[in-house]
Amino acid sequence: MSITRATRWPASIKAWRSSHASYTDSTNPRILQRKDTLVATNYPLYGRFRALTQPEEAAGLLFHPDIGYRKAWRPFLADQRLTIRGHELLRNGEVIAGGAEP
Image 1: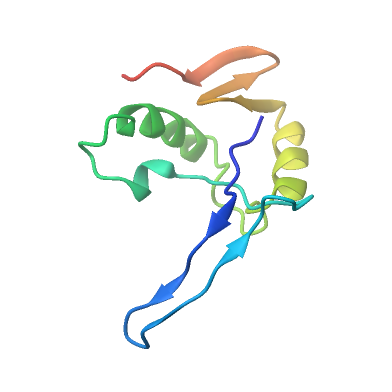
Image 2 (image 1 turned 60 degrees about the vertical axis):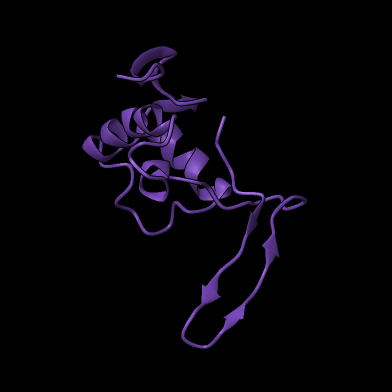
């Protein structure tokens, strides 16, 4: 399972512009990675988000420019023999990181 973004709202404060994109019906939605960087450290789920980001970074999963979309992310994980279930990183079906807050 991959966590995907249903929408995005980029904004330029300098130009006072914003736009909207919806991925709700997309067959290749963007993947939401590094969620811990999008919330404050006192956010209730920060620990859970960080507990997944750290092993993803350690495994080198987040340093490839073409993994921002589901159709690239899933095969990339499969090549590494990894899957993500909720906030858990699994190898061959066994949880290796993530899940509960540290």
